[in-house]
Image 1 (cartoon, rainbow, N blue to C red):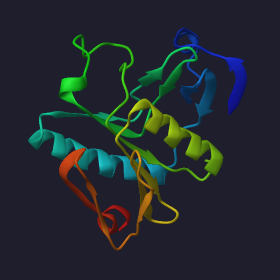
Image 2 (cartoon, rainbow, N blue to C red; image 1 turned 30 degrees about the vertical axis):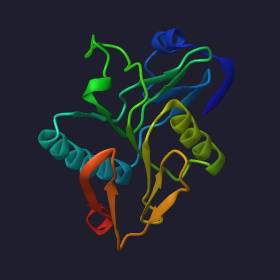
Image 3 (cartoon, rainbow, N blue to C red; image 1 turned 90 degrees about the horizontal axis):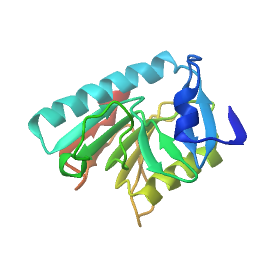
Amino acid sequence: MATTEQFTIEDLLALDDDGCRHELIRGELLSMPPTSDEHGSLMLHLSALLWTYQRSHPEIKCFAGDTGFLLGREPDTLVGPDLAAVRVERLPADFPRRTYVDLAPDFVIEILSPSERPAQLNRKVQQYLDAGVRLIWLVDPARRTITAHSPDQPPSVVEVEAEIDGGDVLPGFRLALADLFG
């Protein structure tokens, strides 16, 4: 659900807990209900892979869903990607804090839900790219694909029979889609 009123980070912090996740996209409040069992299972699988990768690559800090990343102010944009990774050298000096991470991640994974509309999804991808995200994976459980988005590159769709890698953003990170969707 979206609203037309302009919200700020401060307004978001003042909201009562209604059991939904909330994001701000250019001041527009987006509310998302809890995810499906399939979404949760895929997120757990991907989280385990990223956690394992992080253990052998201490220059990377990975974040699970619901971690807020502040991509812009006035109007405020705060997103909570399903999974994200940031090069440690980019983290603020006062990290970790008890608020949002005030930067764009280097890598984002979003798991698509059946209710997401293409226009909304395209807007989110463009928002990430405009903020400086270097690699975005859109995991589509229905099609059993991952679409990779990078700045100045056309989207690349990877089918279930293939493997995807983290490129220069997550060097050495590889995922066989058959293992994820198997």
